[in-house]
Image 1: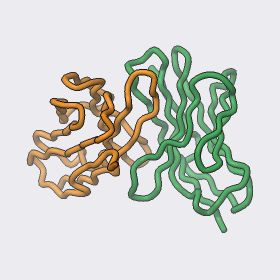
Image 2: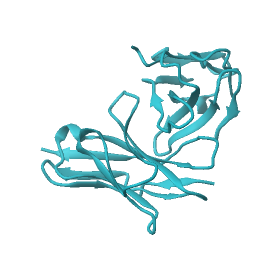
Image 3: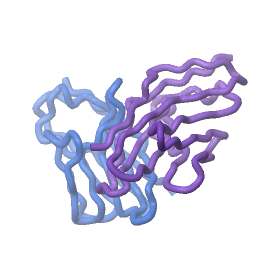
Image 4: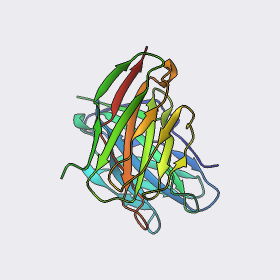
Amino acid sequence: AQSVAQPEDQVNVAEGNPLTVKCTYSVSGNPYLFWYVQYPNRGLQFLLKYITGDNLVKGSYGFEAEFNKSQTSFHLKKPSALVSDSALYFCAVRDAGSARQLTFGSGTQLTVLP
Amino acid sequence: IAGITQAPTSQILAAGRRMTLRCTQDMRHNAMYWYRQDLGLGLRLIHYSNTAGTTGKGEVPDGYSVSRANTDDFPLTLASAVPSQTSVYFCASRPGQGAYEQFFGPGTRLTVL
């Protein structure tokens, strides 16, 4: 069975500093990996995905993520955080051979302090 | 283009009552999904449909049923609501073969008393 772990429930960072939100995964085959963001009282918005190719994936709003197969990680990063980046972030994984279902992590609340 | 709409936005329901949460998409996506979101648990898949006329069970299907009579609509029914079904429910869709990311509706906040 596939699984996702987001080891930090809460991440605080000062505005202008780099941010990292951690994600590790477990799948039986090749992983398809995703990051979503959720603002208060809203649905999830797609940020970026890794399917194949370059390990560094660039997405919306200046976010990027690095796929590391040996460490089974897919950490979300941004060079300079904005207060408006404060939100709940979810990592998700799909096994390439599965019935197209995503498994989500428990979420990480990012707070960017002014 | 509205994308995915869900109704109602929120609902308070007495235990034992029947309730249908509505989900409609106008993107002609083949696959649709229902998730529930609970604090500390992330999103858990309830039911899914890979194409109109077919449905499947997700991680937490008990107490819920779905139907997919056409491409656009994917209602979720609670036959007899229980307090443990208090949650925020999200509908999502995915275009189909070769497209992997899902698109989410705004959610329905359901409270079962």
